[in-house]
Image (cartoon, rainbow, N blue to C red):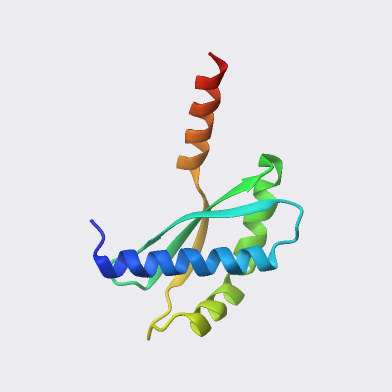
Amino acid sequence: MPTDRQQKVAQLVKELSAQFLGRENNRTSLVTVTSCTTSPDLKKATIFITVLPDNKEHDALDFAKRKRGELREFLKKNLEMKTIPFIDIQIDLGEKNRQKIDELLRAK
């Protein structure tokens, strides 16, 4: 169970990442930051994203991973923490599965 501090840092990283990716996005797809998790020592954070349309997912993930250095600099400027977490970015498979279940339920 994450501590309050981990949850607060994860929420701040999620919000700032959404701002950054929204500003830097190349406008060929919609990238949404769905969640963020942090390690117990707050040295690593994983940002989970969804991409619409689905066929642009690979390109958007590559783009986001290329921008990790700039994102970390953005976090340094906007987070009031001594240690800024190293960022990893992944596709939110839980959200994709939820959407698939919704589609199946609507089809009935």
